[in-house]
Image (cartoon, rainbow, N blue to C red):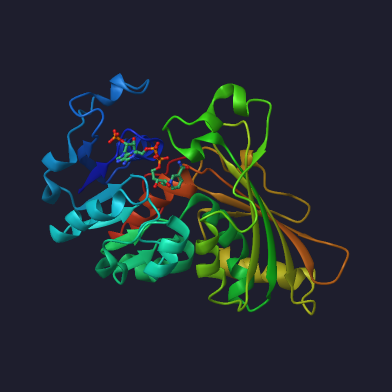
Length: 336
Ligand SMILES: NC(=O)c1ccc[n+]([C@@H]2O[C@H](COP(=O)([O-])OP(=O)(O)OC[C@H]3O[C@@H](n4cnc5c(N)ncnc54)[C@H](OP(=O)(O)O)[C@@H]3O)[C@@H](O)[C@H]2O)c1
């Protein structure tokens, strides 16, 4: 049995992890932390029968956990993760703090210096389908961002095959839980209900760095135009990706590239010709759904990708990473 700790269990990703772990056959919760609600039970904060009592992180018996999940905002996470690593415990960080190997790039996008640069070299980017071998041996996994999971999974097969053009337009819509449980005006019901709100447009959203990290490794001079939009649903991301593909490749060739990359992947749902990813393909599951549509102009394609931002885009992928790290069936705990 694997014992886990959760730091920041009162947030959306932390609570989702509690739900996932409760149904996982090989995992038990050792402890869960909260600074704002230490001493309370989870059932006092969420409509759940879960009676887990929350403790302060300072009181957490770190070594009683085989792995600790960190569900904190970026910048708040790095020193907390360092405590786990000092105690010799493996860590899965859901924040952005260990996703970018170059601390200068981190500081450029997150406007704060990295205080644990010595840990960056041991961090493995936890995009399971892409980095499975490195994740298996990792002591620190940087769980990817929700938008980059969708965009990178949608385009990685083309990039790996050397078939992806450098100019990418990514139009991504997200449910409101993507912004976390913390109160903010843009998440208020009256602001977002019956509305759609673009934000951080014009090479401004931090998640571009993770897209450049993964896709740029194969496609030099990559130029990503990324437009995130908030939509009035609780959960789910739909990314519509407009890309150039090697015009020498026909429709069968492109489909074969995706089949080769994902044909055996339990959490990738490759859609047949004519079908496009929708939120309902993915919400409530740990799957990413991917649809491929050629334009009637050579080498131009539209790729649609959907995922549940709290599952494949966060806590579900974190559990998938844990399964890989501990040699479990990758699908263990996902009986849905
Ligand atoms: N929401 C998503 O769809 C999603 C997807 C992928 C990645 N992520 C990343 O996962 C991490 C957690 O996201 P979330 O959506 O679960 O966030 P959230 O709902 O806002 O929860 C974050 C939790 O962190 C704790 N916390 C500790 N220090 C904090 C601080 N200085 N400021 C605010 N909260 C602090 C809070 O718990 P206490 O006050 O109880 O300690 C809070 O409940 C973030 O880094 C986020 O970017 C989120």
